[in-house]
Amino acid sequence: MKAGTTTVHEHMAAQPGVAMCRGKETDFFSLDERWARGLGWYRAQFDGTRDPENEGVRGECCPSYAMVDRYPRTAERLAAVAPGTVVVYLVRDPLARMLSMYRHHVFRGEERRPARAALLGDPRYLAASSYARHLAWYGDWFPRERIHVFATEELARDPAGTWAALGRAVGVALPPGGAARRAHPSAGKREPRRALAAAGRRGHRGFVDRPVLALDRLPAWAQPVVGRPFPPDGALLAPADGRELQARLAPDVAALRDWVGAGRFDAWGWGERDPG
Image (cartoon, rainbow, N blue to C red):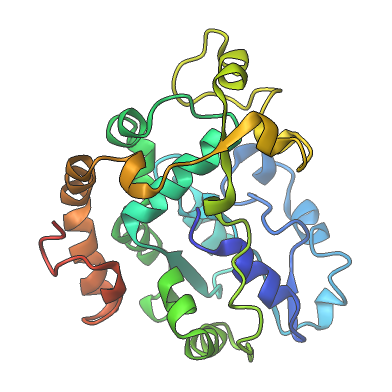
């Protein structure tokens, strides 16, 4: 989540030889209620994506498939239905990803806590940035040579090389066009002003179900009226809190580097064993 899946989906869906599912993500393999709909329902999600029976590649970009703790049967189900699947895992600086996820949930009206309370106190944020755990989970069901890891920062720094490598991984030529635009960036999202936040709270605390009143449900012209820009990362979370989160994530980052090899993701600025 918040590592570029929408950008990758849109770019791949525009290429010949690729059929991506309608709506970007089906949650078929993760959500029990979607899985219960059966394979016929899943196949129907590719209807209208040109001629999926004659396409060389079919797929979806679904963040819930990387939520190990919430949906522990995802990889098992995927391996049972499509054992030849190529798994592409998109990652991002773990702390930056957590802050982007926080902004996303505040914008949608699902998160009420200050950033410090949410990121330090709710294990779901940290779990979603524990990339090596997710890779090990998929490694139990798929050969390692069919699991590929790419970072948001690599797409930004070297779009041509990264798109080409991603294309080789899935077996289709991917030109670099479109890589400069990131879909749904959290930097442009706003947090509700005090009155709107209070109206949506009504007895809820912390991470809640989506309320009826949320910024993303308002027309674009109204969002600046009832929403205010988020503060930058440095003001959203104190440096000491950021170091605390990095310390918690350090073992997983080290394990991730063991998985992908030395030299990858240096743009994150994390030390080899001590990110502080």
